[in-house]
Length: 271
Image (cartoon, rainbow, N blue to C red; front, side):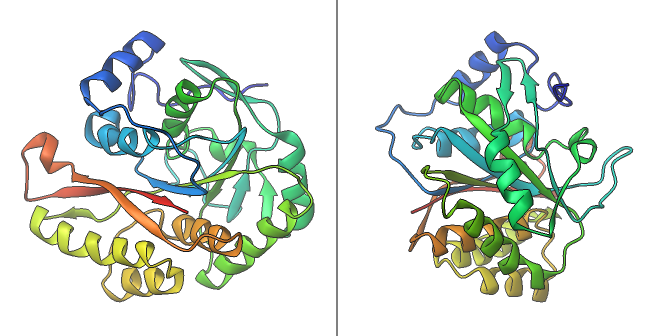
């Protein structure tokens, strides 16, 4: 059975026509798409972070299969366990249409890693990956996904998970794109958010995943997808990526006008 759309009509519009109309309001300049190995994109409602995500996706030429990795926020009746949950069969429904799971790759990941557990139910109410899919479907109709969310995972497992995923891909024979879904600092002033977020984004640009974790932990930064981002960085680095570039940065305050308590949204590309 397909996963239903959990946040259509809430985080983003409930019809294809409305999604396309909202994306057009972001006025992203058309540009030549290039093949990037990885991306870091936000996952708030399109009203708040959609223009940052759209700026990233406007530069990307997605591959046939995308591995999406994001946080499990544990909302509603969700559990944060298992620590790493994969949705391994079927498809995800969005207003654009069904987006199929790459079941062969999902099965390979399950075989390769004791950390990854099949837990379709853990994804039922999680928005961090769902909000990415309409962007990708509009760019490349028919693409497939492998969705992975991270709940409570020790930092020591970040590189192991990345190594396991790379091992599963060794004989897969496809070029893949890896997308990390994260928002940056939460509920601090606009001024402080910019200081904290540019500290973390500097580590992403330097491809320093351990430095990213260190900065977030030492400065008590509430970056919900920090582990997902570090995993994607480690995967890309192991597969030959050497750098990342900042594409766009905003905060919720840029939309709401409330500069006292904002959430930061950064969009980056890895190659």
